[in-house]
Amino acid sequence: MQNVFTNNVSILINDQPISQEFHLYEAGYEKCRPTKPTEFAPINYWVLHYCSDGEGYFSTPFMEKQHITAGDLFMIPANCRNIYYPNRQNPWTYHWVGFVGDLSSQYLEKIGLTTENCILKGTVDKKLESLFKNIYQEAKKHNHFGSLSESFQLLNYLEHHSVTQHENQSQQLFNQIKMAIHENFSNNLSISQLASEYNIDRSYLFKLFQRYEQTNPSIYVQNLKLQKACSLLRKSSLTITEISFEAGFSSPSYFSKFFFQKKEMTPRQYRQQFLT
Image (cartoon, rainbow, N blue to C red):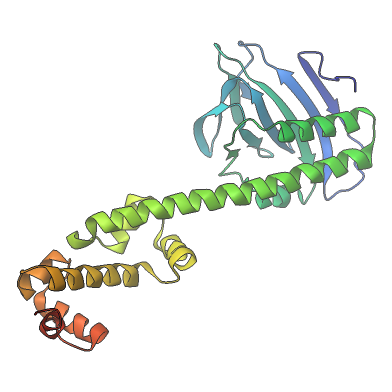
């Protein structure tokens, strides 16, 4: 197969849409010069870039400057000011496709790209690069349905990538939160403090616990305190009062009441079971 990517830059424009809902308006690639201009005027369509080599920088009014490296995707939203430029020492090469139509933003949102979140971080992916090339090749042959079909192949691939990436990020975040709870539960760390520490809102924190532990964070922390208290009652010589504070309860009276609700016996009765 002839390599159509022989020049440093090429762009194809298709201004004869076959649909007002979703249409491939342009496709292209560029091996950028280190001195390429940086600021671009808003355009009335959505452009998705894939950095296949090198590195650069990208920002919009809704997002601070981000470092883009090989394997990353970034999207320029329609009618949005934007700045992007190559790293002078290691200028990037990227492929892009531009979509216009009423459904463009909805399709891109399905793969995790919005005006406020314009980047999908990744690693070099030859399959992804080939999908961009396939769109370009079909567009070059003026194959409107072929280029549209390849565009949906790209979106389908990215939807799977986005879901997997989001799930991995969610799991990683949840593991970090759990570790923080285990390290600080005796210090009366509140749910609000925990959410603030990880820059998430309380509702998302509750969703994470429902997904991975099938409970809410408050109950999870209470059960953790109870487990700690039971362990100390079995294995230590600390007093009931000392154990209540060591396990993170606000007062001995609350500890005793909570313990009885969960175990249907007092802390002292529980301890007696393990004394010889």
